[in-house]
Image 1 (cartoon, rainbow, N blue to C red):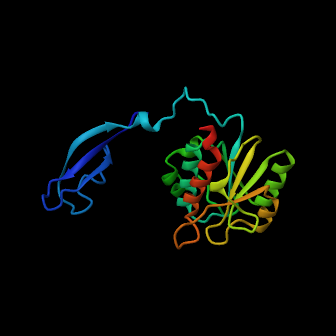
Image 2 (cartoon, rainbow, N blue to C red; image 1 turned 180 degrees about the vertical axis):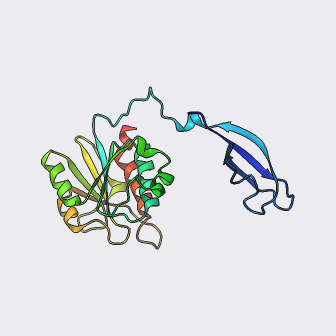
Length: 215
């Protein structure tokens, strides 16, 4: 479906805000900053940049890679994770525990339709799920600070079998029993004073490290 947006500029010379809105959207015709009158200076169609290329084969298809999102509280983080999962060619998202699903509008608002391309399922118990995947030959990775963890920046990862990457709760991290089941655990080196990234950002970093050799 073809969609377009407008770039508008505030006519108030003391303001002059320049900003985009979807064409035909009533919210934003008035300047969001000073509520002054605005005018459209250009229009662009965005269907080409947002619709998937039907001729582009997924290079990850032969090696299925999924993400397991366990007990993430924030719908915004979940939506962002789904969007990144699509961008990096992940095939499925296992949404576990209290993790909100795309049935919630807040997830959809952040995922921007990625849930239409990354299949997803909800599971109450991530430990039971991982035990089942391991029985069928899946490789289990986890992203967490842990005594077994290796720096993800120093690894040359090869996806030679179906793989699932576990990310855990924003505060408590990955469930200890999931860590016990993980074949490998990775951490992201930090150079500043904080000890961790936002969980959605951390997933994007790890996802790139996992799939860069197949892109």
